[in-house]
Every structure is written in C-alpha cells, then in structure tokens.
Length: 549
Image (cartoon, rainbow, N blue to C red; front, side, top):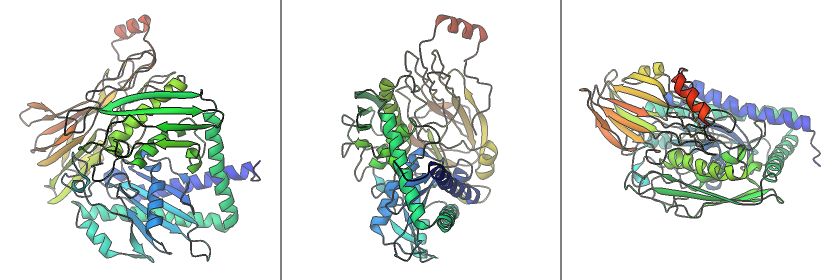
C-alpha cells in the first residue's frame, strides 16, 4: 500500500500535466510558422532525473511516446550544466525524423551538480533542408532528407552557441522562421523549468521526487489492471503500406500481441514485418514504441497519468533492419507519419480480437503529407509549406466515425484558410468533406476531406501519402473506407493524378487537390438502414458540418 495520500497525488498529477500544457501554450503563442502556431505540430513533456516521463501535454502521440529516447540520448551524450540546452533530431540517435527537432533543458534544484528533472519540447519544423522543399519527400537515404543533428548543446551556460545555430540555419530554406520557432521552443522549456522549480519550492525536492515516483507506479498499476482483463493468448494481425515510392511492392506490417492476464503484461512482437525499404517510409524503433504506447494508453481512462509506468508491463520486439526498426542509412521521413499510422492500425486490428467491443474500425490511415516550396513573389524570399491533412475516423462499436478529423498518431489541426493564404502564395479553391467516403455499416466511418489549393507562384509540390491501394478496414462486418487520391490540375484545367509518394514542379495557376480516405465502418449494415439512407440521399456522416480546422 502506498504511503502517498491519493488526494495529494491527484493534485500533483494535475500540477505536472498543467505545466506540460502551459509549455505547449507558450510554444504555440510565440512560434513563427503556421505549422506550429496554427496546426499545433508540437509536444512538450517533463522527465525525472532518470529520464522517465512524468507528465506530457495533450499534444502529438507520435512525438510524446518517442521523446524519452531523445532525452536519454541527450543525457548520455552530454554532461549538461546549469544554463545548457541540448538540441537533436537524428533518428538514429534518439530522434524520429529530421523535421522534428527536440530541445532538452536540465533542471537543477540542489547542489549535487546533477539535474533533478528535464523539460523537453519537440516541434515539426517546416523545412530542415534536403533535396525536397519541406524535407518530407521521397528520398532514398537519410542524407537526402535534410540536416542531421546529433545531441549537441544549442545553449551553453545560458548563452546561445552561435556556431551550432549558424550551421543549422545555413542548411535550411527558411532560416528566419527556423530561428523563430527554435526560440519559441526554448521559451517553452524555460516555462517548464520555472514552473517545476515553483512546485519544488512549495513541497520540497524529496516530496516532489516521492510523488513523481508514485505517479509512475500508479500508471503501471492502472496498465497492469487493464491488461489483466484481456483474454490469455496471442492476437495477430497484419496490414500493408501501399509502397515506398521507389517500387510498387506492398510493405507488410505484422504484429502478435501476447497477453498474460496473471502478470498483467503483454508482449508485442512485430516479427513477420517487411525488411526496411529504399523509400522514405521506414520507421525507427522509437516510432514503433510510440505507437505501442499510444494504443495501450487508449485502453486507460482519460484522466489516467501518461507516464513511463504505462510501458513497464510491456515488451516491444521489432526485428532490427525491418520496416519497424530501420538502421542507417535508411530514409525515415515517412516513418514518423505514414508507417506510424499503419503500425497503430495493425495494433488496433489485433486488439479488436481481444476487446471487440472497445476498438473502432480503421481510421483514414495516412497523414497525407503535403509540402510546397518556392519563392514568394510578394517578398522575394523562399517559402516552405507543410501540412498533414485530416481524414475520416473509423466507426466505433457504438457510434459513427467523425468526419474530417486528425486521428491516432497525429493530434494536430488543419491550417485555417485565412492563415494559409496570408502566409503563402496560395489560394484555397475548395475545402470540405468528401461525401460518402466513410465505410458503410451499422455505424458508418467518418468522411474524408477534399482540399484544393491553387499556386500563385511556381513551386515544388511533394506528396507523401498512403491508403491508395489498401483501404482503411472495417470491423465486425463493416465496409472499408474509400481510398485516397490526389491530382495536379493545370491552369488549362487538364488534370493528372498524382502518386501517393512523389514530387513535381508546378507552375503559377496550377492547383493540387487532395482527397483523403474515409474511415472504415463498424458492424453489418441492416437492410432497413440501407433503405433509410437511400431515401434520405445522405451519406449518414453529416457532410454539412465544417471541417476540423
């Protein structure tokens, strides 16, 4: 029995969570790029002296589950002192993909000379160099994807290391925007440091450390209790990425989840998944771990603390050199955004066998990464636009899926039309729901989106997307969601379909149209439902509402 007062622990949990949330709010308010300011493509978290996460904001699952590896890599590489801040993005040294830059700030409390806590912020930077504007193209090795930053100090004893910063800014297309976003990340870490020092001043270091330890243990107890409700045995599932953008070969992701209810534990084994590929859809191990964290966290109540304790009862096995545990020099830009979504899909498909009444059908399953880069004629300066575009949520066992919403490993928003047209030489021609793209069933899958953007300058248009060949699956007899598609519409109105993974040079007056997949349906659709739907002439997914933005 814990000696910590449960009420006191609940207050402490809320305090830590609010700090991480305030860090995120500070980052959002002070960032320069629309991708961070408007889309909220960032995450913040707090860690104890052992690099264990003790609180995270309600931000991006694909970031948050992997951030402990980044903190650990920074701590192992650098003996940080007061005033230091580490920076890194190397996927093979604690990162995930190159646009996600992480800052780690050590928090010193006593005179031992060792950090008692760490505050960390991660944000997706709209360009970090490489051969494609936006740094999210169909590269074939990591050296083509952008600047690769191992754990190094960005700040030393409170002073910016101008040499490190200069190297970074000299290798990107939009240096002023990058410097501004990095400053926002620094500010977020400072907020975390200040707030946690206030908590220590109020309760004392030993008390805070005891509460942090109990919070991690509490998460573990909750996870074990949930796993004890699962049937003993192994649930297996598989799904596919369409291709890697280099060959047409489908890429298999397989998983076996073996539950041990007596121990309250699970082994997640990705044996049987495809080897790593030449294209940029490879996932490094932190991404796979992050997807496992996300899916298992979804089993817990919303108010359960998301700490390192969630994964203590979990063993994750991913074959080295596979699509889910790539090794250098594999390109990995899409592993963070496309492979991560398919890993989540496969895990949920397996989990549906153990808890069919709790698991939704597949959501749209691709972040539909769109990057556009060129020179803005209004300023004469380079620009780099990046966005992930929402789709249809999978139908739930008791409700329809939601239309046009970001699901699973992303938790961002779509850039508002006004912000998009203000920041970039674009005109948005169309933005709305993709009618009847959700899978039919007792409960219908959510509809995808249609977004059509006209270019007001010559630009490089790059797409990194999936679910063009393998549709989002339905469950319990529900139908699959619609496949995604994209097209380049020339100024003369001729239209050419774009592959899911590729890059083209477009002219002023051309437009790109993205149609994102719908979610899968859940349950068999009974005949009376079909008649009612036919008479109403509606898709049943509420296409009259405004998209998530």
